Image (cartoon, rainbow, N blue to C red; front, side, top):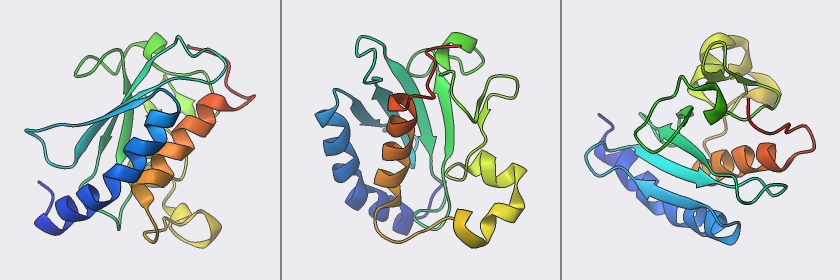
Length: 146
């Protein structure tokens, strides 16, 4: 369970993330019974009718990245290939995102904790994570769903 400091910091930063998603037709929900857990609904710019559901789970905010997983629906299953985007770093063989904005990525690559890939706890890390995922869905490297 996240600390009270983590919860307060998340609440302070969530509005900017919500506003960013609203601009692109996305949504952000806080999971009421699980402090530190948020659900995103994202739409790729190239296919705005598509909806992706993402669960962010923060344990220590802003000092650590969240766990980030794609689901087939809110509170659904993460182990469904079509729930995941086909883009670099989004891996359906291990159901994770191997990039330096997720707890999973840093777990696989402890060397990322230093240098240019190190997690930055300044600014609004919540917004940074949301923008990064959306930018990956909007990238020309995005190839639709798995």
